[in-house]
Image (cartoon, rainbow, N blue to C red; front, side, top):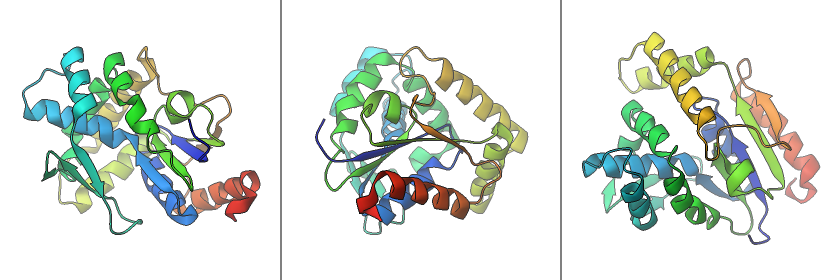
Length: 229
């Protein structure tokens, strides 16, 4: 671990952690890590090469060697994600890829293979890391640890709205079921289960706007890192 400060933002799918983390990193002028994208990339790579999602050793080996680039011209927008010289930005955000990533992420060897790749993002002036085990496993010495959550129903509504805006028709009830199953899988896995770090500030975003969440986190960061204000 180096001396670059780290803020971890963990939480379940649909809690708002991706949007919030990116905004926070942009506000601070820090680097940003979307750790979930790495697991989605491993899952997509497996699907593209007909690798079973329980083939732990093969998946771990490919995770160590996966050729991925994050290209961003606008810090307020998601970067373009390049896998093996192909833009897969849209492909990794599908529901099927998300479900596959949740299964891949439960494999200890895959998590170990990606651990150092995630830690390599810790560079000056600082890092905001978005994921499920950033504060508990990847960056246990982070200066600030945040855990965002929301009800499964609210998270499903948010995802439903996102998909409809992209012209994708999906059942809201199916999304609720999918999110509940993913929560169970993420929270019960033996390696790095989804849970708040003991020092984490827990924020329930169910009834909060993005602006309200950002105001709360800006205040927290200003109090904890006075030089950032």
